[in-house]
Amino acid sequence: MTIDERSQIPSARRIVVKVGSSSISGDNAGQIAPLVDALAEAHGRGTQVILVSSGAIATGIPYLSLSERPTDLATQQAAAAVGQNVLIYRYQDSLDRYDIVAGQVLLTAGDMENPTHRTNAQRAMERLLDLRILPIVNENDTVATHEIRFGDNDRLAALVASLVDADLLVLLSDVDALYTRPPHEPGAERIEHVGWDDELAGVEIGSTGLSGVGSGGAVTKVSAARQAAERGTAVVLTATSLVSSALRGEQVGTWFAPAPTTASTASVPSSMLSTGSADPVTSDAAAF
Image 1 (tube, rainbow, N blue to C red):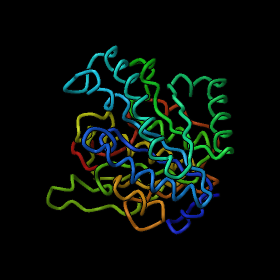
Image 2: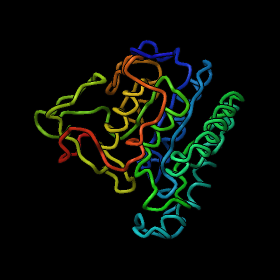
Image 3: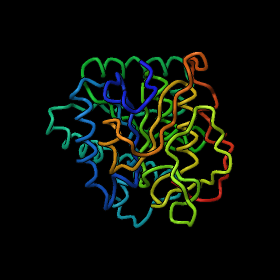
Image 4: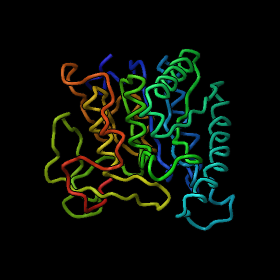
C-alpha cells in the first residue's frame, strides 16, 4: 500500500527503521530497549518490520581497547567482527521480552549491484518476514572495502526499503527533525513536511554527525530520504527517542511525502549505490 499521510502509518504493511551508531552504542546503548519496544509494538499489530542498524564498529571499539574509532580499514573490520556479534546479542536479548526472533542480514554494495546477490537477499528477507522474523540489516563491514562500501547506512536503508517495497522508511538520529539550519543557531526553523519534488532550496545541512562514531550525517539522511520518497516510499526523519511516536503516526519529525505511483518505478537507480550526495542543498552546517 501507499502511505500518503502519517495517520496511515499504523496500518502500514511493511516498515524499515534505520538507527545510527551514536543512538545505540557507548553511553546510549540503553536506547536499544525502548527502540525494541517501539518495533515490537508495530510488529504486534501485524506490520512487517525491518531494522537497519549501524553500530558494529562503534560497539566493538571498547572490546579492542581502543579510545576512538579506528581510521585504518583492517582495524575497522576487526572492530566490526567483534561488535556485530555483541550488537546482535543485545538486540536479541531485548527482543526476547516479546518472543520475537531476529535474523541477521549483512550486505555490501556489491551485493546490491549484482543481480543474483540482490535477488538472493530479497528472497531471504521476504522469507524471514513471512516467518515473522525481524531482520536486522547492517553493512558487512568485516569484508567491505572503501571502494564498495555504501558510505553510510542511511543509503543502505533506502536501498533496503526499495528492495522489499516498504511502505515507510523511518530514519533515526539524535535530532528531532530536519531544520533550515543547525537547530542551535538563531533563526533555525523546523521543517515538518517535504514534498517529493521539493528541492529544499536554501536549507543548510552538514555532512558529518555529532558523535564522531558514525559515518553519516544530515546530507546522507536527506539524500536517502529523497531517494526513498522518489521510489514511492514515505519517510520520517526524527530522533531515536521519538521512534514510538513516529511509528504510531504522530506529528513528530520531518515527513517526506512519497512520489505518486506514476512517478516512481520498481528498479533501484544506480545513483542510490553511489557514496556521493546528489541533493541540491547547502552542505555547510549540521542541521540534523
